[in-house]
Image (cartoon, rainbow, N blue to C red; front, side, top):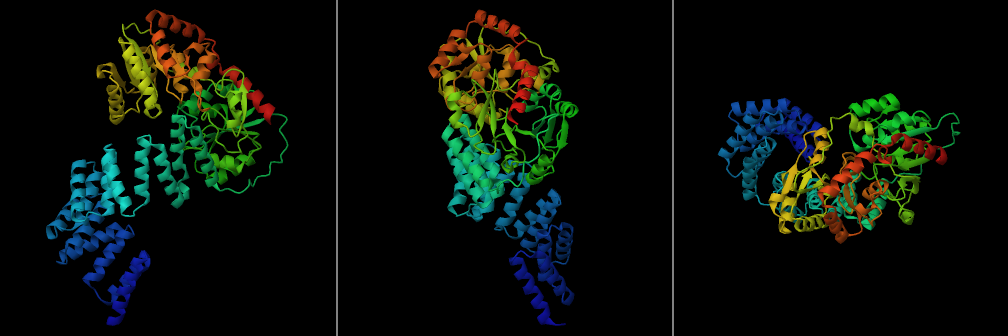
Length: 606
């Protein structure tokens, strides 16, 4: 036997492991073991199999070592890791505990036990073991990160944040640390701080650019127009695409214009609700193509397939999708996502068609010069705000979009008048849209209208959000007995809950859109407020088109005054009857009329 060769192979394996070249290290050790069977080489080979995710081989090696009485806390710990990765959790726990019997100061075994209990959602055991690990090694960053993640899941944000700050002080700004600390800032609606940490993520991981989009959305909720614009400009710069490679030289199709919609939301989603009744009307005059970017099917997507040229393209990257759209010779391409995480703005940046339009899904400028038009109306996008849009605003005569009446007709909805003695205010919005300013105003309304309650009706309001909302209202002297939370179990269930409410309270400065359409259909008036941020003025447009301008407040005080003046059961019942009559012919639900206008727009701009 050549002892020198055996030793050389072993040292080569160690060097390759340091460089994370595990396949080469495996070959080195196999060569070493051909020359001499040794505990050290077998143990190291078992560790290499762990890195290569060849867990069965790793398990076999560690089992044989233990049977041969070659065991220590490190071997039991690594054996446990292999078993954990094969989801043999009970056996893995036994190995980690054996490691700790041999060496009670093995912080890694405590850490690995913590991870198993975390995976099994046994939070108390997980927390206990992570803390034991940190007691032995207080600056062990993986344990700090995982314990912070545990607290984050439990919505104990302060504890989670403090651990992440410890990581930062240890000069650790890895992706998990930055992701979790930015997530906490987002949950606390501290969008300025979230922006700082997410930009750090993007600097090191450019492919994670879409992580900045919740910050953009947060600024729209707060009406922070300048900050929102800066995020858009940052986002567009980071796309770093060359000039469009596409040559738009095909001749306009004289027989039939080609319209394309692109996005993930042609389903049970606001976009699907807006578009459904339009599609049969649009296809009478133009060719309609839908480039669907997710693999999801429901009754609305199945309906859409029957009335369009449906192209399923979730497997295509942005470049290939842009190429496909260009090949189809689409005249007008419509974006329905805007600055949301599921957008395809990179496709629009590549400019595969001559005319690109933003519609329905985003009522603020994307500040992307490759998008030519945004669809609006005289209320949601008044002329005075043209300077704030990179896109040219195409104003429809009445309203920027309509809600498909058939979406309601397919459900078992019962419209009732609430005959309870109390005035019931309702908020149907997601909690992230509810600002502290809105809550303060609603508190004042409840205090001034003694005989009133408020219902928060949305299935995204979890225990943490309920506590936050309740604590805020309580701090503003609203008795908790007047606050109710309802988590609807179905869409039909959700819409029927409008019958519990007398007045739908719109959020501000970011107005609701879909909920205000739904509230109107269920004959419930919406109290909204003017939005000076030139973003998402849906409530104002809807009420103007209902000839309900008196339900649009100028400011906080006016919002309170209007809520008080309208809090009369007889008056409210008359308004509900009026809405019931109006809804039959309202432009809000006249998809045929709107579709004709949409076709006119397409033919005019191409």
